[in-house]
Each structure stands twice: as structure tokens, then as C-alpha cells.
Image (cartoon, rainbow over all chains, first blue to last red; front, side, top):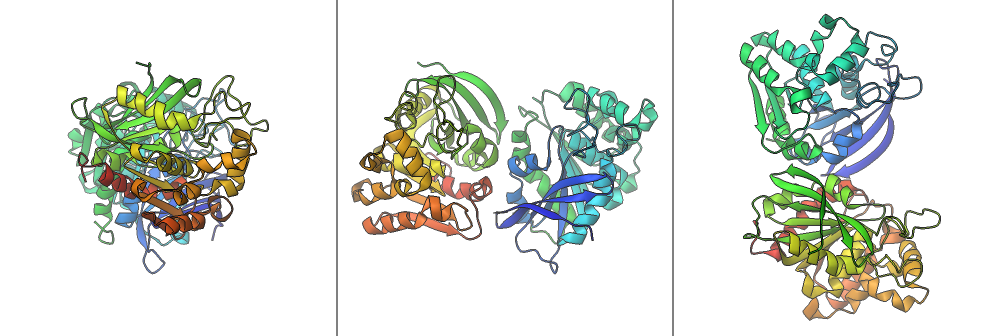
Length: 288
Length: 288
């Protein structure tokens, strides 16, 4: 069994918030993740897990400290699993100009194919396969999973769920980069990680994946987007996602929230709604 | 009317979180504070305010970002006012060794009498008089106030309420430095700010103030203390506070919380209980 090194542990809402370090095979480096375990779980009483993918510049700590998600997770009886947003450490490539939107803190949840990124930047494999296997080995967590995220992490959650519908019960996103093949953030990251041939980008674009989806593979999907979000028009492109869902009749609840911006204050306001949405799909072992 | 400069504004829980800068007369420097206004308030519909005093090393942003207090404040219809923990800026004295427990981020809510501190370090006057006057001039906030805080801020809240019972409806604290005249943090800070004569320290010690209090001036008081708090024995001294309350029959609800530590995770778990406790005292205009 791969080793986990405990970095910190805190009690909150009678559950536990723990942070661990482990060696990642897919990313070829040491990685940190955080996990919230609700009260009362044991290897005789496993709970489902909701995976949270964070946005640009974040680590596992932003959501852990700022979203206020643990209250509802404790009540519902679900675990929260929060990975970092990129590989880290000595030898891991970073953006030459220390840009915030490429390299460290900006893995975009893809498997990079281009040098110098391909040696470490395989966040897609890490989140889809390696991390859930590790979690389900080490913690009283069963294999019922949902996934959500914010911004770059909203993109990651949608893409990962759309490509692996058999592995998730539901998916949700806050302010996702919904059509990255046409947004500046997406074009820059995909160009570096995946190369110039745009046909290799399509498998990482939620709007394109929705349009190619079959009804038999549709998952419960919820998306919230603030209409005062400074990145809405240029980077996030929620209208493109709405149009894609309409085209194939994807059963998504997409809501524009008047006055809300791109910050964690927005997430904290609606995270309980998202966790309850997932809990309903993850039942029957949750406390709705 | 003193000028306020808006630094940031966010919507959350349909209320607003704003951060301002202003010139402080008592502190003789520019200060930042944060304020959460619940939804639906106006100058025709003013709400009570709960003041939050933070602990060592904090600014107004720690509580704002990490406590998750706005959800309950929005529901209850109370404002949250969050000052910084010390004067700041050019010319403001700092600890010679950049210590975390003296100077910047460590004002201890006293009026310093000793050089080089006395020119700026007057957090007691700032929190008791200047800030509430400013808030009640500029915002739809009435003069019904409660006060709470954490660690050094728990000490500040208790001391300020005990010395000014007519100005507050209730007081609460998480993990307060409850008997600072006998704790290393308190002795160091008071020695620098107030000088060597310990009789000048007594007015800033919650346990001593409780013992000197009259029943007619007792306020509703609530204190939570984690029993896994690393600072409990040496610095915080909750047993001394419990004994003081017993001596004069002070009507305080003091609870030891098994397994909880000194972190914001502890605060986030019980902040709703504290806000509801204050709201009851601040009624009848709150939504209990």
C-alpha cells in the first residue's frame, strides 16, 4: 500500500480535516492532498466522497480554509477529497515567466504530451485513477464518488465526469472554464501541454464533450455562475455551455447568480446547495 | 464625517462583504477594517452589529475569509465589524526582533503608555469609541452592539465588555487569554505597552475584572475553549476564568470542547452558536 505522511489534523464539526503527503506515480513527484472525514465513520461504515478541484494558483488549502464546506459535509455524512492543482517540487517544470496560468498551480487537469511538461503534468490520470484508488485504500470511503470544482477546477470536474461517467454519480461546477479551446487561458495552457494541433484539445473541452455525449451516459449536473464575474465573457463562456446542453438535451441545472463574482465568497454561498445535490445522487447512505 | 475609502466589495449570502481604509485619530495612522452587511438593510432598517476581535498575527481578513460567519449573520440580520489587530504603516513601532507577539499584529487591545508604543498603540480607544462611532455614522447599523473574539481577541472582547457593560448587549470569546497578567504573552506585551508596574495591568485582565464586577453590570457571556488547544495551560488559563466567574457568580456559559484546537477550524465549528447567542441579546430586530 502506498505510504501516506500525515502533515496536519484538526477537528471541526466533529469530523476531521487532515492533510497528507504521498509519492504520486502519475505525477512523478510528492503531492499533498486534504481530506475531510465526517463524524462517525469507520471501516464498518464507509461514506461516499466528493472530490473538489480548485482553480488557478490554488493548493488543496484554499477550499479547505475558505469554502466553509465541512459543515454541510459533516451533516450529510460525505467525505471531501481535495487535491492540489498541479505537480510540485524540485525538477517540476514551471512557467518561464512565473505566469499564474501555466505550470505550477495551473495543471488544467490534463495529461501533458509536450516537453517539458509531459514528465510531471498528468493531473488527469492523478485525479481520475491514482487519487481515488489511494483514498479508497486508506480511508473509510466507498467507491461512490461525485466531483466538483471552481474555474479551472470547474473545467476539470466537468471534463473528468463527462469522460468517465461510470466513475461518478454526479458533477457540479462553479464558474467553470466551459469552453477552454476558445478562451485565452485554455488556448495558452493547451498549446503548451498538448501542442499546437487543436484536435488534441477537444477531449478537454466540456462544451465539446457535452455535444458528443450520449443520453445513456448523462449524469446529474449542476453549474453556478456569478453574473458579476470579471472572467465571465472572455474566459468562462457559460453561454457556450448552456447552448451545448440544449443541443443534446443534457439534464444540467445551470444558474446565473445576480451580483456574484469569481471569489470564494461566491463558492461559500452556494457550496451547501452543491453538496446536497451530490448527496442526493450519492445516496442512500447519506443524511439528507 | 471622516472619509472611508472602499478597498473591496463582494456579495455573499445575499449580503455584502466590504473592506475599507480610513484615517484613525486614536491610532494616528491609516487603518483597514472589514464589514459584513446582511441582506435587506437600509438607513430605514438599521441592524445591530457584532464586533469581532482577532488574535495574534491576524488582520481583518482572517476572520472574514476563514470563519464562515457570514451565513449565520445573513440569516440573523446582524452586521459583523472586523477591525485589524494593531496600528500599521510607516512610522508605527514594531518589535525589534519581528516577534509575532508584540507590535504589529499584536496590539492586545490596550492603550499603550510607554515609548515607543504610546504614539500609535491605542487599540482600546479605537475599538471602544472610534470604530463604533465611524460605523454608526456610515452604515445602517444601530447602537446595539455585541463583541467577541479569539485568543488575544477573546481577551480584548472580554476586557472591553467588562469595562464598558453599558455599551454592549453581550460578549463572547473563543480560547481567550483569560488571565494575561500571569501568562507569558500577556506579561511580555503588558510590560512593553504599559510598563513594569503590574498594578497598571489589572484593568486589562478579564479574570481580575470579573472578580471586581458588580452584579448589576453583568452581561450575557459565552466562552468556548478547545481542550486540545496547544496554548491552553501556559497561555490561556481558562480555569482561572471559570474560578473568577464562580467567585462573583458571573452568569457565563463556559464550555470545554473535547478534541478542538486553537485554529480557525474550531471557530468555524461554533461561530454560529456565538452569533445566535449574541442575536438573542441584540433582539428584538433580529431573525431568531
